[in-house]
Length: 488
Image (cartoon, rainbow, N blue to C red; front, side, top):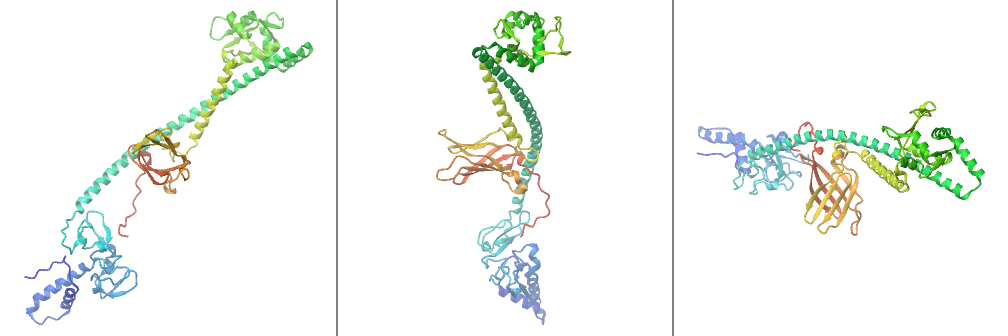
């Protein structure tokens, strides 16, 4: 009994014979069996013709008298399609054979991902398609592994989706933490600016007192003309009537000078029951036994205004006010000594540096939702062979050898991703000069992950580095798919 294997290779002569059989006239019942076989062959021709073709191209390979090459360069008899001879320049007439050098064979791979392979791999004894369709006429026995591959791929995709969901959840948490951190830094900046302003006022007051004291010494030591000194004192009195009023309140006996006893009688410490001691009063007078108005204006008056611990009693010995308003006289602290002036200046410089650093941080681009803010002031390390690489986002990238030598691979420059994914790459520039080359630089690629870690470091070209940095804030929602054409 004749059996026909529709999946085996059919020679061109056999196909031609089958076609002729289909068109002949039956003259005898003895030929009935032959006719049935021929009809079966005729019905299977189309199946042979379209091997290696995707469903979207099948319309070009329907059974007809002629075939037009897909590039439009030639028309050939349809019998020459898949006849193991390349007729079309684009190789489109041999989708199921290896006859054309640039041809492609389509693997349907039902249950997995369809794909194209070079037609040179057809019947080469190696299973390239998971459905084994590329080895239809070879001695290699290929098993259909598409189902298992599809299951593994779907499991991997599901795992990636779970990681993505977890990454997006962590990203939202980091965004919320970033908002709080941003507000905290703004409040910190305002506090530092207020501290800087207070320090500046205190420094200016101290400088004025120092300059006044130096001027007074010059007048007392270098000018013995009483008239000149009196004129200078008179000018100060006219300049500030408030100073004169306070002096008169403190000068109980109206002799034009203040003593320790008068200071004790008029000045008291706020929120304390006891008055000033003799030593404290002498300290306010600068160690002197008495002080006139001019000296009071240049020294004690500014010192009293600088503090917030002391108040002046009214003319009758009770807490009162000068000019109808309560006068608060600020205390004199030992910080106004010459050595403490340097401390104030150092503190002022330190605060201003902190302000500048905070302002720089607050003007940095941390993403649309400031999701990358948490990376600031953080550093991540990875050891690769004899080197330890350190990435400090928004600061610097360094390389440290086992000998302890550290080299800068670039300082924070900018976000360097494409317009549709701006925050996917970081650029660090102007690192230490490379031997016989330019400055070192590093590009950091950010990828989605449930942890924030430095994954890999490579040097594809001399002194040009690439880092893979994984973090949840790099996770992005999957776009809605509008349709996928895997064949083109």
